[in-house]
Length: 174
Ligand code: IMP
Ligand code: MG
Image (tube, rainbow, N blue to C red; front, side, top):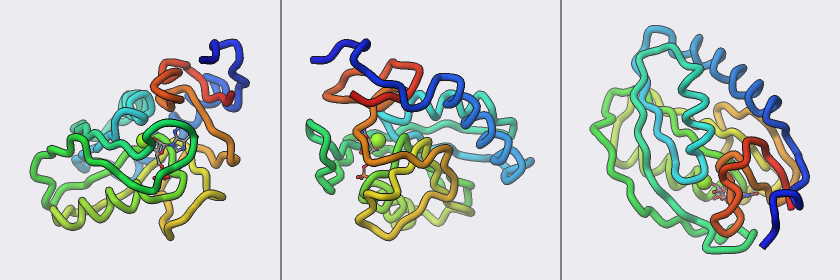
């Protein structure tokens, strides 16, 4: 167990909020006057999705699904567990999947395949707060992301280590 004082800051609270604001402004142009269904991937994306939502001005509906891929520790298993994936009818809707981080890309691929298999959305886009491009195992890219990050195990702002640190207002590493 590490205390919060052992965390080194990678992105400050101000930097994170600035990045989210910029993305919000971009999305407001993309979806101007269009209804948007945001699908937040719990638990990691909770902070990002709620702060992003506060910066959005189009008619917005917020949905939440729960996945898990990391059992424990810091190495991606590549396996995705759908813990709770109940969603409304998303046929002919603009859907934006909101994730905390893309690492290997398995989770993103699972989600995109799931949406396309179960619905015919009007549009389907993927956005992530963080993108660890260097770790990619699957050929997949975010349509929108705020920050590209190095290959470090990150915590804070929704990201956890063994369930802890999600509440930190910044992104750090141990
Ligand atoms: P992927 O399937 O390997 O792309 O992993 C995506 C998921 O792994 C994310 O939604 C996170 O929940 C988790 N994850 C990946 N990298 C980190 C990290 O550095 N810290 C905490 N969780 C991470
Ligand atoms: Mg996640």
